[in-house]
Image (cartoon, rainbow, N blue to C red; front, side):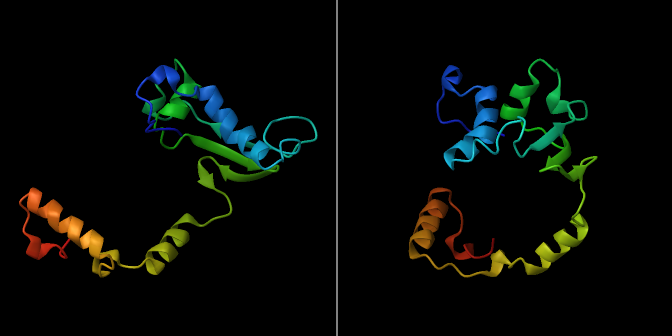
Amino acid sequence: MLHNPTESDYRKWISPAQSFELASLGGYTSVGLQDKLGSLEKNKIADLVLFDLTSDLSMLPKTDPLGQLAWGSPKNVVDYVWIDGYTVVKNKSLVHVDLEKFKKVIREKQPNFSYMPRKSELAESLEAKYRNVLSIDNNNNNNN
């Protein structure tokens, strides 16, 4: 969830518990909805995520699961998600989305960036300087 902190002293980083509070209650507090959302309490709308802490090697050893979720890069650990009582992820799969169809649509709609001309003279100038420093042929700068 969190990575690339700008402070080099890890003791000054926010704690995993603080990061989860910011990700849940903090967002709703910032828009004045903390009385309706953001924590599991009676009469509040709840979203809930169930993590599978056994399926990913990045979650081992289980010394600090919250820390590993916050600071690590766990893959495929979201097992279930409920939004306002409705299941949207079940057994690590989206319930109401055909993922393969979605990927196909995205691929079809995606522009081919490798053939898009540069529109920034500054970017071209910087790239030329970069290529010069690295002794890369400037004549091939559009053949990425």
